[in-house]
Image 1 (cartoon, rainbow, N blue to C red):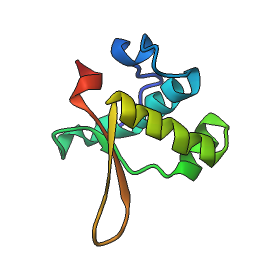
Image 2: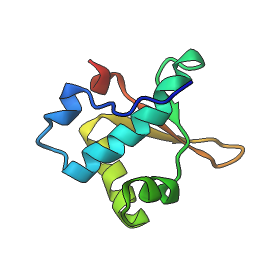
Image 3: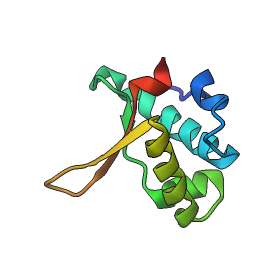
Image 4: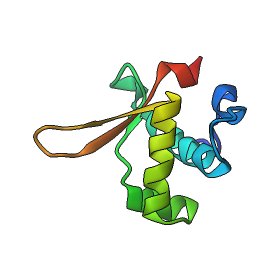
Length: 97
């Protein structure tokens, strides 16, 4: 399946709570998460801070801060698998409305 070039819902795009970097990070998460709709109610991905920082060309610390802002705004949730400690980033229904 070819990944789309760009995904940014209007609620995220026009949010005054988010910086341009945070919106870009959201778009990268969405691109990787939406193909998982077939196996989950909410789209999710397992991107690491390092991988995201390489995609958007910034520091992993900046990614961590962007993810925190996206959680605070209610556009994503983050959960960790008990067995592996692997992180899942979920796009919330608030972002998709």
